[in-house]
Image (spheres, rainbow, N blue to C red):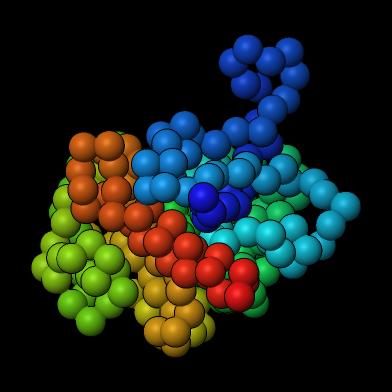
Length: 240
């Protein structure tokens, strides 16, 4: 049986429960969502002797998960007092390069929260480093998101109106990067999903955390199902 292999960017953490020193982490709920969809998640470490293109050569899809804040220097800003960057100095470059390689290879890609923001930044977009109090629902709550009916996201979710999502973020997209378009927004105007203007590029990028309730919510699980199903088609092409 051929199972699609999904490369998942791991985050270097200085402290991980059960380890004496630093570790490489990914949320288990996210990995379980890939497995539930029929994929084999493989966590990537931030350092490698291989180029990003070579690292992804044997993979069928890519997942860039949530995590710490992106260094503001990547989008031309000074670091604000509430911005908490990754423990590893080159975490941002690692994820940006993996995401760039995935786009160059045409691999189906799901970018979640930090990954969503990284997609925007690498296309020249900017971020709001800390949301003001009127956007408090995004920090740790459930809220509704309006979806563009002509988007890939709407097709994936089989939903052309709105969806309720689990949010956990204090930053948000400000200026949208070149070649991207917003395909979902919260009712307070915060951008919740981005897609390439070129609809042939197989990328879905979302601000919320679908893994939080994917085990019980079919629409959230559908995002991982899309990734694995599309990756399976990629795998079939490679084998021919």
